[in-house]
Structures are given as C-alpha cells and as structure tokens.
Image (cartoon, rainbow, N blue to C red; front, top):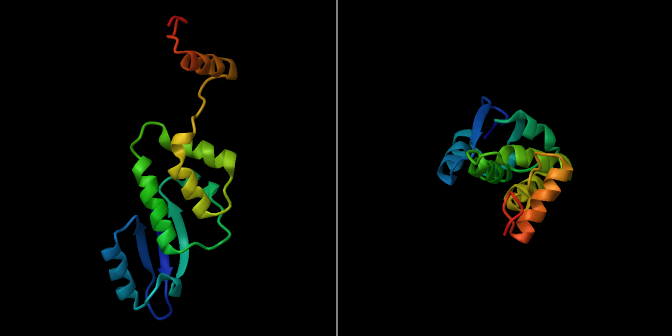
Length: 139
C-alpha cells in the first residue's frame, strides 16, 4: 500500500514496503542496527495510489508504526468496490491534517456515502430508502 526509504547514518538506504508484520519490522530494525524506527529518517514516502498520498499532508512526522497501521487499514478496503473512491472523496472533503486523522476517517468509512448522481436523484433515493419504497414508489 505504501513504500518508504529508511535512512540511517553509516548504512545503505533501506526500502520498506508496508503493511508489514511485527516480525518483519523487527528484522528491519536489526538490519539497520537501530532499536526504534525513530532512529531512522523517513524519506520518499510513496502510496500505491498517489492521489491518496497527495491528500494526506501530515505536519506531525508520523512514525513507521503509524504508517503501518494506515497501510493495513487501506489494504482492508482495497478490494471493496468503490471504497477507494469514497475514501478519496472523504479525504478531499474532511482534509485531515495528520496521518492519524486520515486513518480515523478510513476506519469510519462506513459512515460516509459517495454521491454519484445529482442532488435531486440522491434526495429521491434517500427518501425512498427512509420510507421503505421500491424504485416505483411502492411499499
């Protein structure tokens, strides 16, 4: 779902692909000879869907673990029909200023609905759903 480069002084750059399990993350820390990912500089963070990455403007400099949680949540909706488009629309509307906020929106995605028709058609559809009517307006 996303890829980043980890940079540690005296070591070659390491490309980390997320999501990853704890065992793999521990192996990466061992390889880089660090105790925590905060000891590495995160560079060149790229999302599988670049547009999603452009909508997330984090000013907090999130940890690798935060990116991993986000990548896991994003992977969960990857195969759901229309879910990525809905999530992109939610990001566009809500404009979270942290990765954590973007992850919370992703976890609450069921609370959103992407409108793919005009406002009148959407209103009519919602009214029919609320009243329990079929497409012809019958109970």
